Length: 212
Image (cartoon, rainbow, N blue to C red; front, side):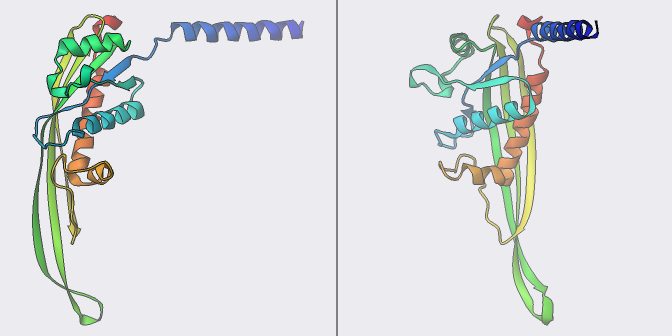
């Protein structure tokens, strides 16, 4: 009797687990296009780099399933309109598509030098490098099933740093294939990451019409 009861209990638990799995909604798939660079930095890879950075943030902090998409035919992000973006999203079987623009990415820097006492009564000449950076992003999220605009949002973020004798990447898009990581560690790069994190929260909290 005890053995049969145990078998029935195991089957019940298995059934409930299967039912819960069946009722759990599937994670939404988010297509992210390269960002449009409205700062005119001249770096052709900047938009893709920013898009991939947002994709990493989406993976890290949401349950969405991000996928990097590209305009068709080698077109640039500047040539991509909402209708084309939604059509590409349908072809790649995603639920949402995100179009982003870097509206502003600027930094201000100043240097201050002076003499400070050191150990043993000796003095040292130091150069204090101050950088203050700010970034503004525009984000448009579309529902692929209906083609409707879910939201159009702008977010801004800033970061600053003081370092003795430091140099920093202070121009958006001034990186190469091997220096984008260094850019992300700069005040301008950190401001960008803060703005992308804020935008990602808005995407995750958005009410999707087709999911109702």
